[in-house]
Length: 180
Image (cartoon, rainbow, N blue to C red; front, side, top):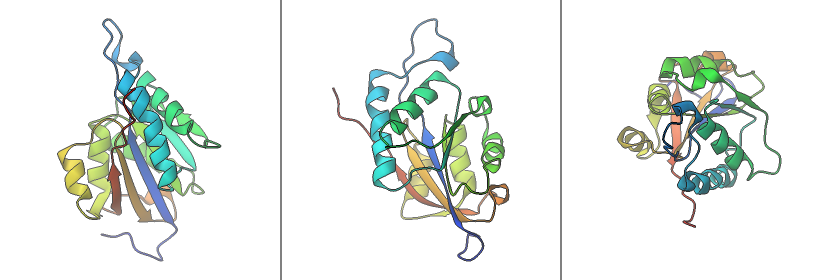
């Protein structure tokens, strides 16, 4: 693990997989909306982010409808949501593409939220994590379901320095809303 105290400010990359989506017939993948369960789980994810003090300074969100709806419902749980960038590259990205998007975060951003899709999110988390607390790495390897949140921490002076194996996976949770 190369993230050490004293090598720059503590930064957090919070990764949120979009909530459960619907599969309406004839609707292109990028336009698929959230399912009823997703509309319950996305606000629960927002509450979890607030309760755990993982609120971002900036969010980067896929342009897919289900990701945008997840962002809107999650951030609607906070008093004042941070700025969001809807980035079309996140939709069909691989892990290396996502890392490039993350590296574009301004240096003043200490906590960045990335809202996107699997398998790329799971691959990014596993690529960046040099280590994990408790069983977090095993849990991500086993399954990174819809609405999953992973939190990676590292010390660095700029997001451009984030590299594979340099972060610590500090948390992984899957918030669920109460059935309606």
